Image 1: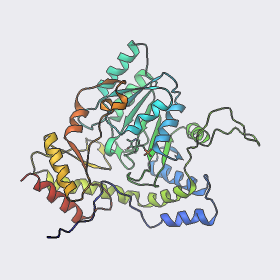
Image 2: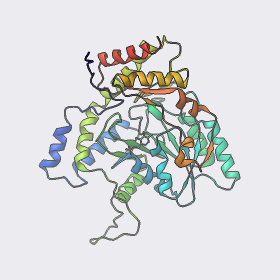
Image 3: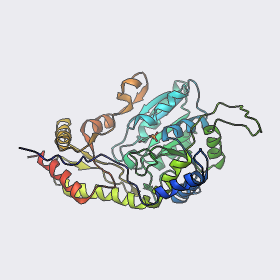
Length: 377
Ligand SMILES: *Cc1c(COP(=O)(O)O)cnc(C)c1O
């Protein structure tokens, strides 16, 4: 008997609007194929207007590159320690090592799944007692859920340690009426292919201090001094966003509010259709927070149940993925110091990211829910 193979449903696939090609064509028509150009400036202005709060933006070739430059701009160098949320994607932590600095990982709290303020303070005091005051704190709005911003800012001020706000997954999320990307001394965004909007690859560095975003552009374009010849008094990088890709970004900014609504509606659909199953639960927005629901995550009762659901979906050509494996459990970071409480390890064992693209329709979502329910029969 022939079985019909259904079209693959991806975890989070790109979703173009109607203007991206027009902006890319502008780049071609004006021969602005080289980096730098009007699409980059336009995309930066669109981001600044959307986030508000007097934020300045510099568009770069990736979110990872933005974290690298943010660390350098905050003075991180050889042998320094940087505190990083353990429950995150490796790109939050990798750039620490590019500078010869050392990550110190801190576990999560249960209300937002992000860096625990209690454990963060404990880690800072402990590192200071060891004579190694951390240089920077990297906090992450994971899956779009805002971290405990007020608590983290208070700790940052109390110990005078700046914060890099990893907002790669949180464009469109809101904390106490303010958009994510506004809270760190420096914040970063990502426009990688799986993010809420994409330029196929790209990122941005954000700050209220225009000197910082200007310096980021300077470092990202090979640190060229102001001279008619090429003169350098700093080591630079080739990290600027290309003008062609920024054209895609300008088109994507026009549909960002719709994309945020679509992702939130995915979450509401899953919660509505699956929360009567007592083995499943969803993370609610804490008071004052609104996650963009970049990915909808479901928490199951056990590793075994999580795997049963994942395999049931895979058998039907549907991609899902366990939650991020914490950095303190990663082989590559086994030497790093860490402050843990078991929260992120438990989330990793029991949690699953469900297909969450803004281009999913009601039939896709119904089909996914039906398969998940069937795993409980
Ligand atoms: C995607 C992502 C990054 C890195 O962004 P790229 O643009 O892919 O380099 C950093 N941090 C988090 C949490 C991410 O999800």
